[in-house]
Length: 212
Image (tube, rainbow, N blue to C red; front, side, top):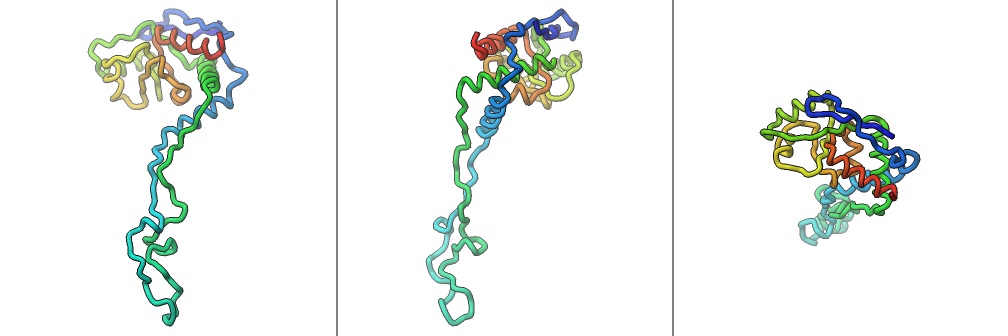
């Protein structure tokens, strides 16, 4: 059995949260992780870059000067791509960078990253997480008691407004419901703080990924 520390909001250790070793995927899935992360980051791209080709640049079809007799190179129009202010050849146009990842590949990637985090000790399980006032100082105090420094992700069973409001003013901190947390988030944040109820949801997702 793999063990994850089970803590209360004061940072005191209550015991261990046990996870069956057969649920961990540590011998495969690296390529799946790469594909999922690339697809996720590609999906974040706006794809709104746009340039004007020679047909879209404003201007008339009048020749800038006569064809012969001036000693200049021939020129047919001011929208020529070889001129400053002219059109752009093969420039970017609005497009989607989205990539499709098979469902089983995405599940394998999630299982691999979650297993690595469990194996490396990146998880902390909270017995409960209740904020009285929904203030940032409450979350900051919690992170201090748990000795969490750097980027952190708080995973809860269901996102409530108090926690969302309290966490938004703290840099390098994000909050996500257990049903929505993705592979990229698990990799991005070295410190993962999850409630016991949320951990049960993640374990069920892990079981589904490994086919149990």
